[in-house]
Length: 358
Image (cartoon, rainbow, N blue to C red; front, side):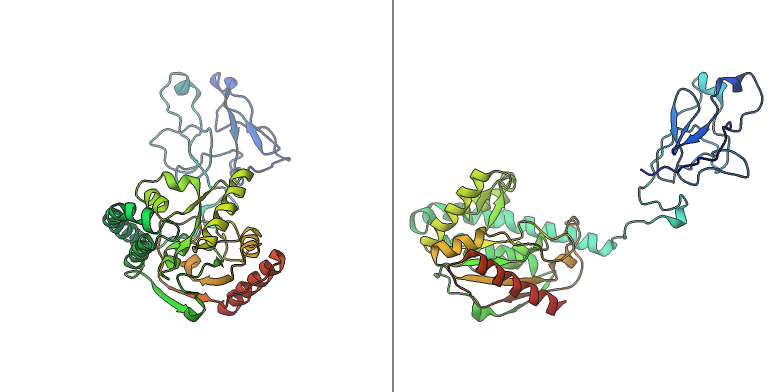
Protein backbone atom coordinates (compact mmCIF):
# COMPACT_ATOMS: atom_id res chain seq x y z
CA UNK A 1 0.00 0.00 0.00
CA UNK A 2 1.25 3.44 -0.85
CA UNK A 3 1.15 6.31 1.63
CA UNK A 4 1.92 9.91 0.92
CA UNK A 5 4.65 12.04 2.47
CA UNK A 6 3.84 15.47 3.83
CA UNK A 7 7.11 16.73 5.32
CA UNK A 8 5.99 20.40 5.44
CA UNK A 9 2.70 19.92 7.28
CA UNK A 10 2.21 21.12 10.83
CA UNK A 11 0.21 19.25 13.44
CA UNK A 12 -3.53 19.77 13.11
CA UNK A 13 -6.69 18.34 14.67
CA UNK A 14 -9.58 16.62 12.91
CA UNK A 15 -12.40 19.20 12.82
CA UNK A 16 -12.28 19.35 16.60
CA UNK A 17 -13.40 22.52 18.29
CA UNK A 18 -11.74 23.90 21.39
CA UNK A 19 -13.15 21.80 24.18
CA UNK A 20 -12.14 19.57 27.03
CA UNK A 21 -12.80 16.59 24.90
CA UNK A 22 -10.45 17.79 22.21
CA UNK A 23 -7.54 17.69 24.62
CA UNK A 24 -7.87 13.92 24.52
CA UNK A 25 -6.97 13.94 20.86
CA UNK A 26 -3.35 13.81 19.93
CA UNK A 27 -2.30 16.36 17.31
CA UNK A 28 -2.04 14.85 13.85
CA UNK A 29 1.28 15.10 12.11
CA UNK A 30 2.43 13.69 8.80
CA UNK A 31 5.91 12.29 9.02
CA UNK A 32 7.24 9.90 6.38
CA UNK A 33 3.74 9.25 5.15
CA UNK A 34 2.32 8.06 8.48
CA UNK A 35 -0.18 10.24 10.30
CA UNK A 36 -0.57 9.71 14.02
CA UNK A 37 -3.77 10.80 15.74
CA UNK A 38 -7.09 9.77 17.16
CA UNK A 39 -5.50 8.04 20.09
CA UNK A 40 -4.92 5.15 20.57
CA UNK A 41 -4.89 4.16 16.91
CA UNK A 42 -2.28 4.94 14.32
CA UNK A 43 -3.64 6.15 11.03
CA UNK A 44 -2.18 5.75 7.58
CA UNK A 45 -3.04 8.77 5.52
CA UNK A 46 -3.27 7.89 1.84
CA UNK A 47 -1.89 10.17 -0.80
CA UNK A 48 -3.81 13.37 -1.54
CA UNK A 49 -6.10 12.87 1.42
CA UNK A 50 -4.92 16.12 3.02
CA UNK A 51 -7.28 19.04 2.36
CA UNK A 52 -5.30 22.34 2.37
CA UNK A 53 -8.48 24.44 2.27
CA UNK A 54 -9.80 22.97 5.48
CA UNK A 55 -6.43 22.13 7.02
CA UNK A 56 -7.48 18.60 7.83
CA UNK A 57 -7.45 15.00 6.77
CA UNK A 58 -11.02 14.20 5.69
CA UNK A 59 -12.71 10.84 5.81
CA UNK A 60 -12.25 8.45 2.93
CA UNK A 61 -15.57 7.22 1.46
CA UNK A 62 -16.36 3.53 1.65
CA UNK A 63 -16.22 3.15 -2.11
CA UNK A 64 -12.55 4.12 -2.09
CA UNK A 65 -10.14 1.34 -1.55
CA UNK A 66 -7.52 1.56 1.27
CA UNK A 67 -7.24 1.14 4.96
CA UNK A 68 -8.01 4.10 7.12
CA UNK A 69 -8.66 4.03 10.82
CA UNK A 70 -11.06 6.96 10.60
CA UNK A 71 -14.44 7.06 12.23
CA UNK A 72 -17.66 8.32 10.73
CA UNK A 73 -21.31 8.11 11.58
CA UNK A 74 -23.22 5.90 9.11
CA UNK A 75 -25.44 8.81 8.11
CA UNK A 76 -22.48 10.98 7.19
CA UNK A 77 -21.95 10.08 3.54
CA UNK A 78 -20.21 13.19 2.27
CA UNK A 79 -16.49 13.29 1.72
CA UNK A 80 -15.62 16.08 4.19
CA UNK A 81 -17.73 15.15 7.20
CA UNK A 82 -16.37 15.24 10.74
CA UNK A 83 -13.97 12.38 11.19
CA UNK A 84 -14.05 11.87 14.90
CA UNK A 85 -16.36 12.41 17.85
CA UNK A 86 -14.45 11.58 20.98
CA UNK A 87 -17.40 11.51 23.38
CA UNK A 88 -19.53 9.25 21.21
CA UNK A 89 -16.61 6.98 20.52
CA UNK A 90 -15.84 6.58 24.22
CA UNK A 91 -19.51 5.67 24.76
CA UNK A 92 -19.14 3.06 22.00
CA UNK A 93 -21.90 4.64 19.95
CA UNK A 94 -19.80 4.97 16.84
CA UNK A 95 -18.82 1.81 14.97
CA UNK A 96 -15.46 1.43 13.30
CA UNK A 97 -15.40 1.28 9.55
CA UNK A 98 -12.56 -0.14 7.55
CA UNK A 99 -12.25 0.55 3.85
CA UNK A 100 -9.70 -0.81 1.44
CA UNK A 101 -7.92 0.97 -1.32
CA UNK A 102 -6.32 -0.54 -4.40
CA UNK A 103 -2.55 -0.55 -4.68
CA UNK A 104 -3.06 0.56 -8.26
CA UNK A 105 -4.29 3.98 -7.22
CA UNK A 106 -2.16 6.59 -8.86
CA UNK A 107 -3.05 9.93 -7.29
CA UNK A 108 -5.65 9.19 -4.69
CA UNK A 109 -8.66 10.13 -6.80
CA UNK A 110 -11.02 7.59 -8.36
CA UNK A 111 -10.53 9.04 -11.84
CA UNK A 112 -6.78 8.62 -11.71
CA UNK A 113 -6.69 5.03 -10.48
CA UNK A 114 -5.54 2.25 -12.79
CA UNK A 115 -8.24 -0.43 -12.59
CA UNK A 116 -7.69 -3.94 -13.84
CA UNK A 117 -9.00 -4.61 -17.30
CA UNK A 118 -12.63 -5.62 -17.20
CA UNK A 119 -13.49 -9.14 -18.21
CA UNK A 120 -16.41 -9.33 -20.60
CA UNK A 121 -19.50 -10.97 -19.24
CA UNK A 122 -19.71 -13.17 -22.33
CA UNK A 123 -16.25 -14.59 -21.69
CA UNK A 124 -17.24 -15.56 -18.15
CA UNK A 125 -20.38 -17.27 -19.39
CA UNK A 126 -18.41 -19.13 -22.07
CA UNK A 127 -15.92 -20.23 -19.43
CA UNK A 128 -18.69 -21.58 -17.22
CA UNK A 129 -20.24 -23.44 -20.14
CA UNK A 130 -16.83 -24.82 -21.15
CA UNK A 131 -16.21 -26.35 -17.73
CA UNK A 132 -19.78 -27.61 -17.51
CA UNK A 133 -19.40 -29.46 -20.82
CA UNK A 134 -15.97 -30.89 -20.02
CA UNK A 135 -17.16 -32.08 -16.59
CA UNK A 136 -20.27 -33.83 -17.90
CA UNK A 137 -18.33 -35.49 -20.73
CA UNK A 138 -15.56 -36.58 -18.36
CA UNK A 139 -18.01 -38.21 -15.96
CA UNK A 140 -19.49 -40.34 -18.73
CA UNK A 141 -16.17 -41.23 -20.38
CA UNK A 142 -14.40 -42.13 -17.15
CA UNK A 143 -16.80 -45.06 -16.87
CA UNK A 144 -15.56 -46.40 -20.21
CA UNK A 145 -11.95 -46.02 -19.12
CA UNK A 146 -12.59 -47.86 -15.87
CA UNK A 147 -14.33 -50.72 -17.70
CA UNK A 148 -11.51 -51.14 -20.19
CA UNK A 149 -8.63 -50.57 -17.79
CA UNK A 150 -7.99 -54.24 -16.84
CA UNK A 151 -7.67 -55.26 -20.49
CA UNK A 152 -5.45 -52.28 -21.22
CA UNK A 153 -3.05 -53.30 -18.45
CA UNK A 154 -2.89 -56.82 -19.85
CA UNK A 155 -2.60 -56.07 -23.56
CA UNK A 156 -1.23 -52.54 -23.95
CA UNK A 157 0.51 -51.55 -20.74
CA UNK A 158 2.78 -48.86 -22.20
CA UNK A 159 0.98 -47.14 -25.07
CA UNK A 160 -2.63 -47.53 -23.79
CA UNK A 161 -4.26 -46.70 -27.12
CA UNK A 162 -7.78 -47.29 -25.84
CA UNK A 163 -7.42 -44.75 -23.04
CA UNK A 164 -5.89 -42.21 -25.39
CA UNK A 165 -8.77 -42.66 -27.80
CA UNK A 166 -11.16 -41.85 -24.93
CA UNK A 167 -9.03 -38.81 -24.04
CA UNK A 168 -9.13 -37.64 -27.66
CA UNK A 169 -12.91 -37.99 -27.71
CA UNK A 170 -13.16 -36.03 -24.46
CA UNK A 171 -11.00 -33.21 -25.84
CA UNK A 172 -12.88 -32.99 -29.15
CA UNK A 173 -16.32 -32.93 -27.48
CA UNK A 174 -15.11 -30.20 -25.13
CA UNK A 175 -13.30 -27.98 -27.61
CA UNK A 176 -15.50 -28.24 -30.70
CA UNK A 177 -18.52 -26.26 -29.43
CA UNK A 178 -16.38 -23.30 -28.40
CA UNK A 179 -13.17 -23.05 -30.42
CA UNK A 180 -11.91 -23.26 -33.96
CA UNK A 181 -8.64 -25.16 -34.27
CA UNK A 182 -6.41 -25.08 -37.36
CA UNK A 183 -3.66 -27.68 -37.68
CA UNK A 184 -0.75 -27.30 -40.06
CA UNK A 185 1.92 -29.91 -40.77
CA UNK A 186 -0.03 -33.06 -39.94
CA UNK A 187 2.25 -34.93 -42.32
CA UNK A 188 5.10 -34.29 -39.85
CA UNK A 189 3.40 -36.33 -37.15
CA UNK A 190 5.07 -39.71 -36.79
CA UNK A 191 2.93 -42.88 -37.00
CA UNK A 192 1.17 -43.80 -33.73
CA UNK A 193 3.49 -46.77 -33.20
CA UNK A 194 6.68 -44.71 -33.66
CA UNK A 195 8.01 -43.40 -30.33
CA UNK A 196 9.16 -39.79 -30.27
CA UNK A 197 9.78 -36.83 -27.99
CA UNK A 198 7.30 -34.03 -28.69
CA UNK A 199 7.97 -30.52 -27.43
CA UNK A 200 5.93 -27.33 -27.57
CA UNK A 201 5.58 -23.86 -26.14
CA UNK A 202 3.13 -23.53 -23.26
CA UNK A 203 0.71 -20.59 -23.06
CA UNK A 204 -2.52 -21.79 -21.52
CA UNK A 205 -4.47 -24.45 -19.68
CA UNK A 206 -6.13 -25.11 -23.05
CA UNK A 207 -2.90 -26.49 -24.54
CA UNK A 208 -3.54 -29.99 -23.18
CA UNK A 209 -7.01 -30.11 -24.71
CA UNK A 210 -5.71 -29.03 -28.12
CA UNK A 211 -2.84 -31.53 -28.12
CA UNK A 212 -5.12 -34.42 -27.15
CA UNK A 213 -7.23 -33.81 -30.26
CA UNK A 214 -4.23 -34.85 -32.39
CA UNK A 215 -4.82 -38.48 -31.43
CA UNK A 216 -1.30 -39.50 -30.49
CA UNK A 217 -0.35 -41.51 -27.41
CA UNK A 218 1.39 -38.64 -25.65
CA UNK A 219 2.59 -39.27 -22.12
CA UNK A 220 2.46 -35.84 -20.54
CA UNK A 221 4.31 -34.77 -17.42
CA UNK A 222 2.17 -33.25 -14.68
CA UNK A 223 2.49 -31.93 -11.14
CA UNK A 224 1.71 -34.55 -8.51
CA UNK A 225 -1.00 -32.36 -6.98
CA UNK A 226 -3.21 -32.66 -10.08
CA UNK A 227 -3.52 -36.41 -9.51
CA UNK A 228 -5.47 -35.72 -6.32
CA UNK A 229 -8.47 -34.29 -8.20
CA UNK A 230 -11.38 -36.71 -8.63
CA UNK A 231 -12.14 -37.99 -12.16
CA UNK A 232 -9.35 -36.00 -13.85
CA UNK A 233 -6.73 -37.48 -11.53
CA UNK A 234 -8.07 -41.01 -12.09
CA UNK A 235 -8.00 -40.54 -15.84
CA UNK A 236 -4.43 -39.24 -15.71
CA UNK A 237 -3.33 -42.29 -13.75
CA UNK A 238 -4.97 -44.65 -16.24
CA UNK A 239 -3.38 -42.73 -19.13
CA UNK A 240 0.00 -43.28 -17.47
CA UNK A 241 0.70 -39.55 -17.16
CA UNK A 242 4.08 -39.05 -15.50
CA UNK A 243 4.00 -37.34 -12.06
CA UNK A 244 6.66 -34.80 -11.15
CA UNK A 245 7.61 -32.81 -8.07
CA UNK A 246 9.29 -29.76 -9.53
CA UNK A 247 11.45 -28.96 -6.53
CA UNK A 248 12.49 -32.57 -5.85
CA UNK A 249 15.64 -33.60 -7.69
CA UNK A 250 14.95 -37.29 -7.04
CA UNK A 251 11.48 -36.96 -8.58
CA UNK A 252 13.00 -35.25 -11.62
CA UNK A 253 15.48 -38.10 -12.09
CA UNK A 254 12.74 -40.72 -11.76
CA UNK A 255 10.63 -38.79 -14.27
CA UNK A 256 13.40 -38.85 -16.88
CA UNK A 257 14.00 -42.56 -16.30
CA UNK A 258 10.32 -43.32 -16.76
CA UNK A 259 10.27 -41.26 -19.98
CA UNK A 260 13.16 -43.27 -21.40
CA UNK A 261 11.49 -46.52 -20.37
CA UNK A 262 8.26 -45.54 -22.12
CA UNK A 263 10.09 -44.61 -25.33
CA UNK A 264 12.00 -47.89 -25.34
CA UNK A 265 8.66 -49.69 -25.11
CA UNK A 266 7.11 -47.85 -28.05
CA UNK A 267 5.32 -44.94 -26.37
CA UNK A 268 5.84 -41.22 -26.98
CA UNK A 269 6.36 -38.51 -24.37
CA UNK A 270 5.42 -34.86 -24.49
CA UNK A 271 7.37 -32.06 -22.82
CA UNK A 272 6.78 -28.37 -22.28
CA UNK A 273 10.48 -27.40 -22.10
CA UNK A 274 9.68 -24.00 -20.57
CA UNK A 275 8.56 -25.86 -17.46
CA UNK A 276 5.42 -23.75 -16.94
CA UNK A 277 2.98 -21.56 -18.80
CA UNK A 278 4.13 -18.24 -20.16
CA UNK A 279 2.49 -15.30 -18.38
CA UNK A 280 2.76 -12.88 -21.31
CA UNK A 281 2.98 -15.18 -24.33
CA UNK A 282 6.71 -14.77 -24.83
CA UNK A 283 8.79 -17.90 -25.25
CA UNK A 284 10.85 -18.73 -22.18
CA UNK A 285 14.13 -20.55 -21.83
CA UNK A 286 14.08 -24.28 -22.57
CA UNK A 287 15.21 -26.90 -20.09
CA UNK A 288 17.27 -29.77 -21.47
CA UNK A 289 15.44 -32.71 -19.90
CA UNK A 290 13.39 -33.57 -22.99
CA UNK A 291 16.40 -33.36 -25.27
CA UNK A 292 18.51 -35.49 -22.93
CA UNK A 293 15.85 -38.19 -23.14
CA UNK A 294 15.82 -37.93 -26.94
CA UNK A 295 19.61 -38.09 -27.27
CA UNK A 296 19.94 -41.11 -24.98
CA UNK A 297 17.13 -43.10 -26.57
CA UNK A 298 17.75 -42.03 -30.17
CA UNK A 299 14.13 -40.90 -30.53
CA UNK A 300 13.39 -37.97 -32.87
CA UNK A 301 12.28 -34.62 -31.46
CA UNK A 302 9.09 -33.20 -33.00
CA UNK A 303 8.66 -29.48 -32.22
CA UNK A 304 5.19 -27.94 -32.18
CA UNK A 305 4.02 -24.34 -31.97
CA UNK A 306 0.74 -23.34 -30.36
CA UNK A 307 -0.72 -19.88 -30.97
CA UNK A 308 -3.96 -18.33 -29.75
CA UNK A 309 -4.50 -20.33 -26.58
CA UNK A 310 -2.93 -17.66 -24.37
CA UNK A 311 -5.39 -15.02 -25.59
CA UNK A 312 -8.44 -17.25 -25.34
CA UNK A 313 -7.70 -18.46 -21.80
CA UNK A 314 -4.90 -16.29 -20.36
CA UNK A 315 -2.57 -17.39 -17.61
CA UNK A 316 -4.18 -16.77 -14.22
CA UNK A 317 -7.65 -16.32 -15.76
CA UNK A 318 -8.65 -19.93 -16.26
CA UNK A 319 -12.27 -19.15 -15.45
CA UNK A 320 -12.90 -17.26 -18.69
CA UNK A 321 -12.98 -18.28 -22.34
CA UNK A 322 -12.55 -15.55 -24.93
CA UNK A 323 -13.46 -15.94 -28.56
CA UNK A 324 -10.75 -16.62 -31.12
CA UNK A 325 -9.02 -19.29 -33.14
CA UNK A 326 -6.14 -21.59 -32.30
CA UNK A 327 -3.41 -22.72 -34.60
CA UNK A 328 -1.14 -25.74 -34.17
CA UNK A 329 1.97 -25.95 -36.35
CA UNK A 330 3.73 -29.33 -36.38
CA UNK A 331 7.34 -29.05 -37.49
CA UNK A 332 9.60 -31.61 -39.10
CA UNK A 333 11.34 -34.04 -36.73
CA UNK A 334 14.92 -33.36 -35.77
CA UNK A 335 17.46 -35.86 -34.50
CA UNK A 336 20.87 -35.69 -32.89
CA UNK A 337 23.06 -36.92 -30.08
CA UNK A 338 23.82 -33.56 -28.49
CA UNK A 339 21.05 -32.33 -26.12
CA UNK A 340 22.29 -28.73 -26.32
CA UNK A 341 22.10 -28.66 -30.12
CA UNK A 342 18.66 -30.30 -30.10
CA UNK A 343 17.41 -27.81 -27.52
CA UNK A 344 18.71 -24.81 -29.44
CA UNK A 345 17.31 -26.00 -32.77
CA UNK A 346 13.88 -26.84 -31.38
CA UNK A 347 13.58 -23.53 -29.56
CA UNK A 348 14.64 -21.55 -32.63
CA UNK A 349 12.03 -23.35 -34.76
CA UNK A 350 9.24 -22.57 -32.31
CA UNK A 351 10.40 -18.99 -31.73
CA UNK A 352 10.55 -18.24 -35.45
CA UNK A 353 7.01 -19.56 -35.93
CA UNK A 354 5.70 -17.52 -33.01
CA UNK A 355 7.22 -14.38 -34.50
CA UNK A 356 5.78 -15.22 -37.91
CA UNK A 357 2.28 -16.00 -36.64
CA UNK A 358 2.28 -12.93 -34.41
